[in-house]
Length: 130
Image (cartoon, rainbow, N blue to C red; front, side):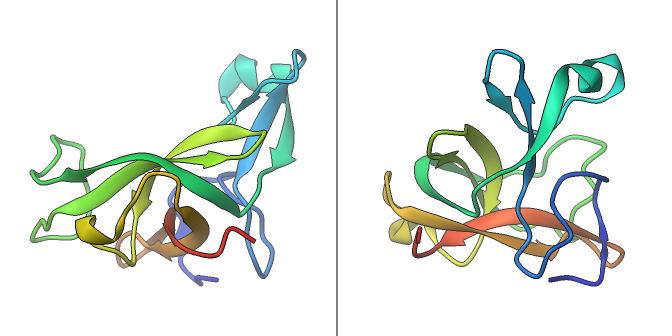
């Protein structure tokens, strides 16, 4: 786990193996991230699975518009959707792989990575889905 401050409060648990924190609505639907403001009162926080499957992905090959504050100089990166079975589909940065390594449906594991010199963020990498 990273000693860097999280990029935003309440995104993941403070455990040796962190889990993302979603919100369960009264209907049972789970959302991520937990809504803020008045909408936060309408969900119950729930720790999500650390393991999922790759639902879709693409390469971000150009620098996002302001207020992008990622590493400079910009380098292309992978972004995708990981399905946490029975919970939610999470949009995420994908690390530890290149485009040729990815296949839809492959196992993915949550990791916490540096975002910049002060902050950490979450990402998923190819894994065991155990």
